[in-house]
Image (cartoon, rainbow, N blue to C red; front, side):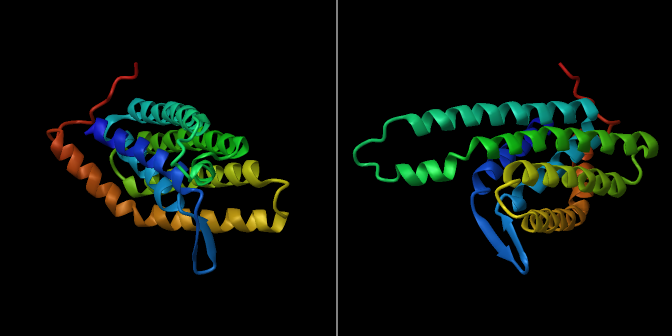
Length: 211
């Protein structure tokens, strides 16, 4: 199952980069559409780390980083290709997929720091509690790393562009949303871990060796 969870992680990660261009309103919150996708990547690394070990979770994070770089290179190439005479959506294509260098830098920086922090915190608690208290490490690892992710991304992407009070409002609203999702995904963490261990033969944790 490791390869499938890693594929889901990378797929959601790439999808979140595309969806982030659209904002939606939920109550008093204004959030990028990526908010409904990106938070699930932390659930994936938690499940991978719980069942297959810390090295496997690290490899998944590294694969996600490399895949983002490759995707951005090919997106850039696609934008630069001369459009066919009958293709009249070049401007829209660039607007949706282009992204500014600053946004790309913000995304990659926040990603690599927060995802690795999440893995470290998760396994610190796992070493302390063993297989017990999955709910604790799942939530603390996600909430701590999502705070760093939110602060870094919004600060790097929007500092000097929007007023400070709006900047802080964006950080608070997005972080509250991410914490709510983290709490809601805890039952799914238990279900996926239990199901995966059963699928793998109900044996001790399978460790995917780091290459």
